[in-house]
Image 1 (tube, rainbow, N blue to C red):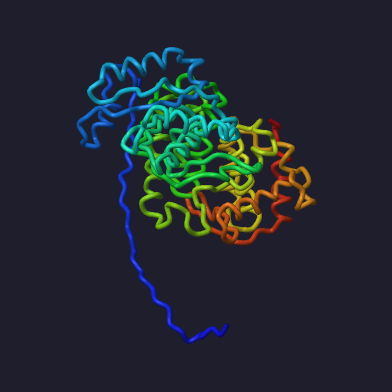
Image 2 (cartoon, rainbow, N blue to C red; image 1 turned 120 degrees about the vertical axis):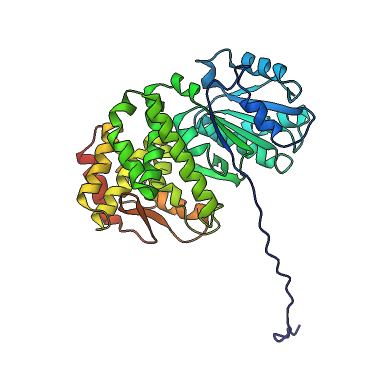
Length: 398
């Protein structure tokens, strides 16, 4: 067979731009009959007939709000001309276990099929970030996309994971190995859910606020820094300001970053996350996601200081802020097997997994100063070991 290398090829090139609206609502007591927010979200599509709705609910919420299912049913009955429950709400265990059990994904798909949902129906995801990720993945893959309404119930979910375009579950011991980029139809933040959180979950979500402040908005970081006492004392007004600003910064990034679906090798909103994701796995999820992120932020901030990017005072201010909020900045798993780079319990395996998740070159976000990020493509493992040693010296073990 002779191949003519001079033969010309042909090409059709067409650029397609897709526009989507992203609305985040802020309310209180969403399922009170006099609160029309959810009904208004659904009527915003301009279609007149009642829409089928199915809800998947984080079981953890029902410990504190046992009447939630009844309230949801009563709400849909009250607004029957707008929405109708097509099946009994599905209750699932929350936390990272929800993303580790792939049978749950199949069960949600079975619920969608049995309820006869179509692409103009609505799936309500009510819960913490892990449940939102799982249900979002199910919604994005049934009929190639059912309308998803996220109703985050934790600080972390309201200020970070609930406000984004990512959905996914864990597989092969790796965070979010299976997933999609699919924007929700809407996000509804109900501050009443936050009053039921324990102190650990209240604090955990603040780590993501610190993360986005450090890389995008110095004034926001200083707001958090100067309000640590109010946050520890669970001042709701302060927390609501933080959640609102986080939503603004996330949506601004999605709209204006030029790469909202991470087609390149950069994950700028994942500052501190390469270590955090690995630590969650290494601790068998003893660490909450936000707690692991706080350690990851401390580690990458310390490394930024050691390589000469971040000055001493900024580095200390970051660590002091995290500590003042009650975060632990060291766990033994940080230092385990550091000399054995291929060992599955070596933290530095997280760098490889971080790169593989994107399929491109290693790209880490570090800090030049508070509010100013920089991307690097190489790291010095000796200095990362030194950073871990510095955190160990400061440790209050989890």
